[in-house]
Image (cartoon, rainbow, N blue to C red):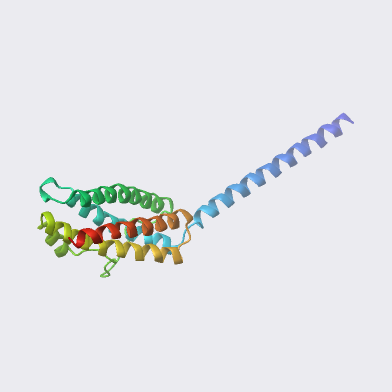
Amino acid sequence: MTEVIKKSLNLRTLGIGAVVAVVLLAGLFTQLRSTSENFNDADVMFAQMMMPHHEQAIEMATMALEPDRGASRDLQDIAVAIVDTQSSEVDQLRNYLSEWHAPSAHSHGDEMMQGVLSDDEMRSLGEKKQQAFDRSWAKAMIQHHRGAIAMARDVLLAGKNTSLRTMAQGIITTQHREIDQLRVIARR
């Protein structure tokens, strides 16, 4: 009889172990599946296109912070905020693309991202100083921000990733506020 009890206990232990293994594997599968299903093509395209868009804004902001540029203090304050915020967002976007195993560059072909300045426009901006720089920079950054806002709205409509959608909403809020500040500078 003890032999039968031992076999019964061994079978129960084996059965419980098998159930636990199945539950753990099912949980792992669900976690992997939910990670891979947590984004879509709209999320990837937004991340791929917003990175270079932000990088140009950072380049413009860095230009405004050059000591010999003569930019006003309030414009410099906006430029510092742009560098801080958008550098952090570029890092987040790069991390999303890495997690999603997506390339960091999107082949844009000849299409121009909304609000991005051409090389000639960037060169012209770089030649300006003081009040002329402030006005030109403010107008250019308003255009640039409007492009980012449009891109963010697009991903809010079509994107799937909750964290990325939260970032997009933050971009809209922050850049609308900065546009209001930039309009004042542009009118000087």
